[in-house]
Length: 361
Image 1 (cartoon, helix red, strand yellow):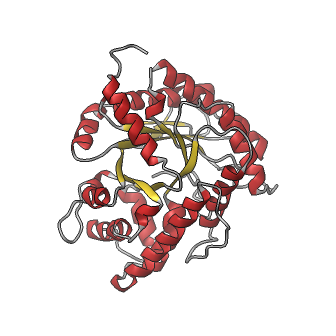
Image 2: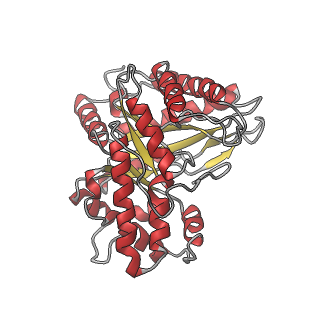
């Protein structure tokens, strides 16, 4: 690594932030839904998609008593990052007072990758990213997130899609680290399709191999990064059913073969699993015997919020009920992140599939 790439003090800061995010028994609440995606969530409970309703909902989440016991970091959307609670306190400061680290989504969405099959894409947002990262850091953010997506079919993911997405994530990671933000690297292999578990494992290994090659080529300080991958599961339309142990075996093997031990933590996305399945699979991964040199925890959006939204339903009198759902799911996933989830924590939407085809934020 070139000496001028990242000063020692900055490396120490980044490593410290990353380590705090993956504190045992804790994980990340992904509350970075775009205005459009949040509109879909609110429409499902018959609530109008306006700025104050979005603010009220995020206030419910961030003011939940004791949420800091199992949530170490929250990923925010640009709008939310600058919003305030009813007392006029910035959400970033509300979180910091609870000891929760504020993060920020910095990508600008998926766009088509010309010349590729089956709608493959890449993620835009590198232009002006350094300036945006500097501004977010100044205003209280300590980590960032950027999502790329890859699809499984008979002909995908293509070589160019894997290479392009790995490089754009590496470039993003470099810019984040230069500005004091820990980059969460998210190369998501979508669950869409009929592929079986073995095919999902094969592709996940390919994608992560491309990813870490690119990160090394861009001189990324791995100790100051986190990985946010998909768990290895069969395609949503696969007719063969696999157990949580099967999923754990495939996931851990894929990670062992591709992710360097220098990476402090892996924060799984939920990928449209039901709230309960996301907890059970995370627990199985942590219970699985084998070499696991990284913390294995969660960075869940839908799998932490589905029951919350349903219980709240946009009504002030239901705020406590919504917060109780968040407390339950955060505790369930905190337990799962150390392999101590007993299962069976019921909620307003616990068993419902949260799958969305070709999911975008």
